[in-house]
Length: 447
Image (tube, rainbow, N blue to C red; front, side, top):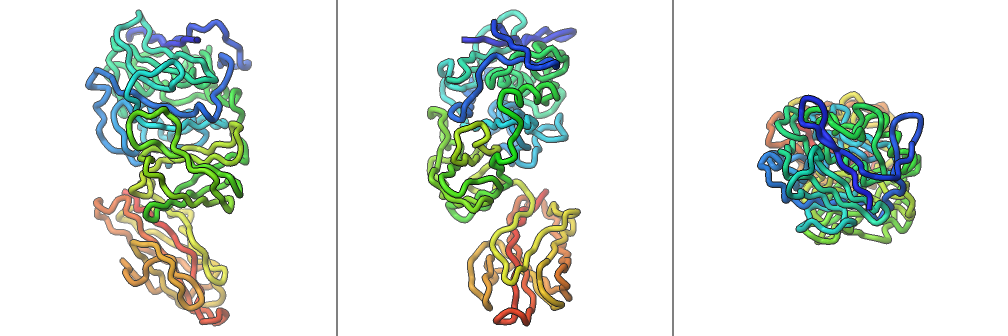
């Protein structure tokens, strides 16, 4: 069993993020080191036993769409863990200290958030928790069998703070957790001052929240640089108890979709739905009753580090509250609709510009907006929304294959994260029944 810990330095109490390990292997001419081993796909889960005694460790009770269903210490540790991921987590928001977004590792590594544990667990149960007492300048330590799992403990003797603000009175739980989780995934300490894996912190430790180049190089040395064929999730849509996962790099057969468990406890194993087919960019899956708010991931038919996708925030009751625009469905006659790249964020109180493209000839058309998806055959095509209950219909002028539809969005903040569906149609004499239809857009309104 290897034990690592973290210290604090300088004018603040000296806290050890230390590592009392005998096997430190230099990773490169830079400062990072490795301790041997890596976490396989079967060890990507993490849970938090929220036994933190300081009120400050659970001050943050503000919901965040990027971290649905959890607040306080659990959210802080979730943010710390996801910073090591291969991609931005959702849209990357959630930490004012990191304007570039959470999810900086760039390696073939992504963790699986599995909610809350109900006990401390053993040394290979992949659980974060507080431990009573103190140990000199040591803040926390990681017990690392590595290939069989790990356990991270935070000494009760310190005042832990869950953020997300950066004016921390005490020790920043997210920053220390980010360091300790680096040990769990196989990194030792670095000699690069200011890096997350430096063996001590100055001040509260907020700086440890964000990976440095040295940290990124370290995790990429252990797990490999993010592969071009690594599965990528870019969002999902919800239709009742079924979701369509959107992205790329999915296999034709034998995919899995991983969910976060709904209830506290469990053994940390993700809720998995197996034997799923895909066209490479979408997977349709029924949400298991045991799955809850957390993350989803796609595992293609491959057990290597690069076989598991990034983690994407998931709330089975919504489209994840990650605002933006996603295409779905098929158009008739090659027609398509998409948001302009310069105005692709549908923000309340602004004008969103949609582009209707692929239509043949010059013709008037109409855009329909609805609160519901549907599959309705019409005039040789398919309406992919409920046109009988529209929230708006917008006639537009001529379309020479590239018609811009300006959509004024309401400013009511209560509509934030509302999902609206859009589709366009134009008169087209080249079609059997005289009309061509675009595919659909799922528009999630941004606050």
